[in-house]
Image (cartoon, rainbow, N blue to C red; front, top):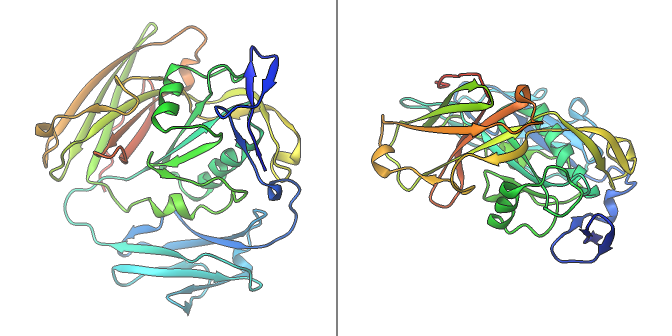
Length: 352
């Protein structure tokens, strides 16, 4: 089932291809266990010698790990932890009541040289008016339970709806990603996280989390009155070309009622009152939401690139909840590494 809605002056509802709110019949009132999923907590790629911990859930978000059998390359392991002794790729599956499951792969790598912590980006095109967008919100909650190595950005809109946080930067991102249906979910900007009723399977984003990155990011920001000055530095440990840097201001902890059409989520109520929204996009810091070019001369091995941003904090924004998100993108617009930090706080490179 798919619903398309557009709000005109907050009064009239008409059908439109511009606004969509997706769903399926299985979204509402499904109480039957039909499949299971398995995920590797903390990501599916790790350095040799690190331990993988697996979690098995059914489609109703029940944790059935202790009742499942887990197989690595078709060999049963004891419990749900495994420490590989060789680098390579391993196939992982689980068995619980003979329910269907999609196996996942884990990757074991060896690090050579300087490396940094890697994070993935989860962008959610959402709206407080969008009752099916709670699938994307539940995915955020479940991903948080399995890894902290990701950065989330909630892109609210579109402009003209009742969502209070739509803005020009949100619209620019919607155009960039050709968003015509809500929710729209992307990992590292270029990989679509397909919409369906499955909000427990984290294998897609976790499969994109790497054991390390060759790109390090750090930030130093200072507030003077209503002005925040942000100095960003990016360190490269290998020669790269055609890169871009994109930067955004987001506000965490914004509260607003959220529509909900998913009967199995958040108590099944049609409205979630006083829902806390995470990392809501407020504005861009770079000239384009797609990023500003980094000169190739600055992206050579052992080089450090620096860029400064200034932002005038509008009245009504909660300074204590504002964050800066910095990402480095490749020539195709895919995110290579990303980091967030509260304004007024400085951090250092995260060497491994």
